[in-house]
Structure formats: C-alpha cells, structure tokens
Length: 503
RNA sequence: GGCGCUAUCGUCUAGGGGUUAGGACGGAAGAUUCUCAAUCUUCAAACCCGGGUUCGAUUCCCGGUAGCGCUACCA
Image (cartoon, rainbow, N blue to C red; front, side, top):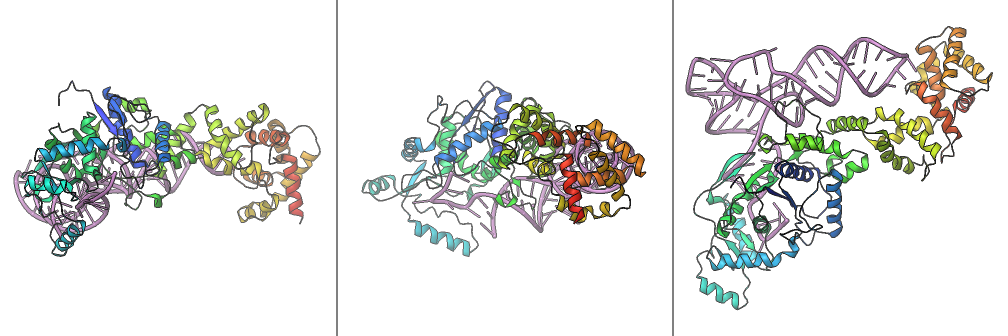
C-alpha cells in the first residue's frame, strides 16, 4: 500500500442490541487511528441479519458513539461518497460481484442440499475429521451448472479457495498463515440470494476503500476466507489489526452476566464518557514507557499506536474504571457534575423537577460535600441519605452505634450539647456549632472521639461522615427549602434523637 | 476433533539474552482528621510448565498445559 493512500477505517456494528464495551473499544481504536492519521472514519451498519436487526438499535448505537465522543466522516446518517452505508441497501452489489466471480470461474454454484451438507458434516465430526466441504460441486461443468440454475434449481455460490496457504499481515499479531486445507470453499451467496457475512464484509470494505481493518479477534479465523475473496475479486488486501477479546473477571467472554457491559449502562450509572474512553484505551494498549494512565481524547489521538496494542485478552476491571471516573469527576467543573447529578436526585424524590436559585445553590454545596466519596454519580442519592433520611429511631437502635451510645461520656455530652442548643435560638452556623462544642468540651471534659461521636450519631445517625463545618450549613439551609423531602435541621434532629432515646 | 490466537504481580500493563523485572488499579500499613471519604507516604504482590539454543533464559526456538476464538446457506 502506498504511503500516500489516505487512511480509511470503518466501524461496522450490527444493530442487534446495545453497544457493548468490546465493540466500543473497537470503535475507539478505529477512531483514534483514523484521527491520528488524518484519515477517514466510516460507520457502516451491518444489518443483513434481518431477524435480529432493529432500527431503534441503530439510533442507540449512533447515540452511544456520540456520547463517547466518537464521530465519523461517512455513515448512514451523514452519507458520503461510498453510500449507501447500510448493508441492507447494498444487496444488489453483492449479487453482482458474486455473479462476476462465477463468470470468471473463481466461484461456482453448489447444488448440495442443506440436509446433505449437514449429514457430511456430522459424519466428518464423528470420524474426528475436520468438517470441511466435500467439494462435490467444485468440478461441475459450468455450462451444466448454468443450465440447472436457469431451470430454477436452487444453488448457493461458493468461492474456490486457492490451492496454496493463505498468508496475511496483522498489525497486532504479525504475519499469520493458514493452510488452505482447512478453509473449505465457503458459501458467499445463499441459495436464497442473501449474501453471507464473510463475503459482504469484503465487498463493502473493498468498495469503500478501507485501508485498515481494525476489529475483534473473533474474526481472525475468518480472515483467510476474506483474503481469498479479495484476491478472487482482484482487489487489494487491506492491513488487518485484530483486537483481543475483553473478558469478565472469571476470564470468560464479557457478557451481561458480568454486570454493566453496555455503554448505555455506564452512562446511566453516572460514569463520565472521558473516563470510559480513557479506560477502554488502556485495555490492550499502553503508551511508550507504560507508566502514564490519564489521557484525554486529544492525548490519546496523539499517543495511540496500533503497533503497541497487546494481542492478549484483557479482563475488564470495574475498580480501575471507577478510579478513572473518580478522577474525572473531580477534574470536572462543578456545574457539569451538578447538572449530570440532578436527575439522580429527582428520581430519588429528593429534588423537585425544577430548581429555584436557592435550591440550586444549596444543591451545589451538597454535591461538593458528597462527590469525593463516590465512584459514579448514581451513588450520590444514597450518600445523601444522611441529609434527607435522618431516622432517629434507627440511629438509636443501630448496632453500629451501640458502642458510641454506651460510652460513659455520651449521656453527658448529649445533655450538655442539648442544653447549649436549646438555650440559644440564634442561627446554627458552623461558627456557633464550634462554640457550642467547645463549651460542651469544657463542661464534660470529653474530647476527640468521645466528644464528637455522640453528637455525630445524634445528628446524622452515624459516627462517620463529612465534616460538620460543611454539613451544618447544608442541614440548616436545606430545612428552609421547599423540597419534596424535608431536610431536618440540627435542632429537629437533636429533638428527634432525644425523643427516640427516651423510649 | 481440526485450525488459529494468547500466556509478566489478583487485575491492566512496561520491559527485555545478564535488571533490585518498572508503573497503575485493588489490597495492607502509616500520616492527617472527631470519624468516613479525599489527600500524601510506605509495604506486600508476577515472568504457566518442560525441553532446547546459549557462558547465561523470564526474554529466542520447540513441545505441553490452560484460556479464548473460528470451524454454518450466523454476524
């Protein structure tokens, strides 16, 4: 291939379901490669499997890719010089080239019935032989075949596999060689006239001038057939790059069984797209030196290299994704996180549909308080339970609090704290809280944990939690806001807690 | 069954004929804080097995094993 040839890659998903992380990673590597080379990214929809393809999946697919920040220069939605970009719209093309191959003697009609083939196959398997096509119709006289077809006899079209080993180059695996003995003449056009995937993909890739085929390594074993097809069709063979499989923690192919696997799942969990992109890039690829982990999409475009892609399969590690997600959440402008987090709170019944100015300002403070402790945005409402769902009775009865509540100083501390709070109706500010605590400390002699833990339990229901300095204003201001769920302020909490203790 | 691909800490990986085999996630410990989270510091943790080549293999070659994939008128 000449170096002047413009890089053209394609991502060719089937619209049969959600975009899976494995495919997303393939799309990403294609995109990174294209953008780095200043090449063209093509999106092609492989919808020849009519039974499983659905239009709504195609829309989702495009949406998921866009969400990840992956764009394309040619595709079903934007068109392009090689349109159409949906295989179902290209059927005529496939038939045309198949007939051409037959005419040139590079392919031939096969009249074997499916039952017959199935029998052969089973027999071969029983005798522990490779179940390859017998070649029965290979030697049929072309004119005779032509006549039978003209008479309406159903025939599939098979490619004649050459009598020599098939070699090709793979950027991540190096040179690959397959013996032709094991690649029996594949069917390219079914007797129904519907073309077969391995054929279609070659016609499309060739006609779309794809220079680099970057895809999952489940296609590696299909590649010899495809190479034979390119050669039979008289088209240049592209470069290949077969990406390893992504596995689950049990080293089995990643599936729904392993939890979140679709891009939509991650989006709904509150994983940021740049975190997912960064993580996916690191699955199977590492930069020179191998020590850097954080990459923006722009940096990935600069650094990425197919030559540095590992051939070995990688286990998807949710913890590392979370680490990156935490990183990007902290890096983000707070307004962005607030905006993304808002729906989670609305859904949890903690926020109204539309926030007024005061509520928004308050919400912003709360997010700042909660955000350091979450892996993903959907954990925010549960972290906010200490603000929205204070339950005095549960606090009193919780085994986690038993030790604190049984501690000798606790009763004194709480009594002194209550006396201070109740003896003064001025607003509860962090400063006032501090003053009160100092007073309680002086009166009871308690300090450190024995001072703070009882108060913490009484006000939040737990002996662990965020700093009071930040928490108190959120409680106080929250209690003034018209929220779907009332936020109890310090006085309310204390009263409820003491009442619960009394029982 | 055949063919193919793969094999470095638990995980993602760097490296490579002689190295203290590096980084990151996670784990552990410590610092900090009333506590949790965050943050910082430190620690533990790996070359699948067997042959060969070689003065020397984790690295190169062969075999084994294991995992995965393909073996369709699926994609």
